Length: 266
Ligand SMILES: Nc1ncnc2c1ncn2[C@@H]1O[C@H](COP(=O)(O)OP(=O)(O)O)[C@@H](O)[C@H]1O
Ligand SMILES: [Mg+2]
Image (tube, rainbow, N blue to C red; front, side, top):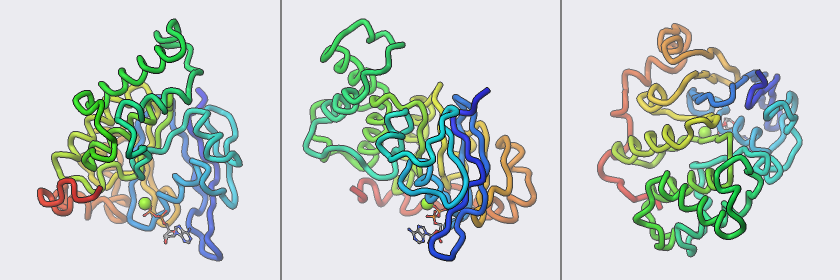
């Protein structure tokens, strides 16, 4: 099977400093894959390369068999890869629904779905309404997106990726800045809405990782030191020594400001 996303020998330096030192990874269509590892390992750098924000010094990136290594971010997005949840991409003054309509408008290519029978504005509205419901923002349909809570804005951000027709999603620390209840809801939302899509996610909360991931890869100092099922990774001595032992001991108690920072990061 052709992988949804494949990385071959990815290297990245900033000046003389090697950050990624030969990353190989293949993610199957429909797989939910978590990338974990210590701070500074190069996870966000890798996401940035995949999304076209920067180019690797060596290696190739394929999306469903097509080489996207040298494409610009907009061209990669048009091919169905979305980066979401990391930095809010909503238009603050537009309503929630209009944000979704804007995203839906960008993709009239998806002819395999039921709304292919509808035309023009009706199709866009239908798609936006479906996503609005899927991300749990039905009650917030007509409010300005800028007035949503931080967690709601991130849900909308995910909705924008879905309405835009993304089949492959990169989520970089989707629960960062959320309290425990918000994080649990966000993880559930991600799991539900990404069913049937390909997901590559960086996440530090190991409860969330084990709840979502079909496979996990561990990046340490710019190299993937282990890749496998959650059970395999959990039992891997090298992984425990390099990263996981510490995380599992901390558990989700590590989540900062648990109840106090609700909505503090807007
Ligand atoms: N634009 C940049 N210029 C120089 N160094 C960078 C740049 N971006 C990231 N780095 C460095 O690369 C390393 C990996 O960073 P990053 O990919 O953000 O790690 P992670 O997301 O795994 O925490 C860090 O040491 C960081 O300081
Ligand atoms: Mg990072």
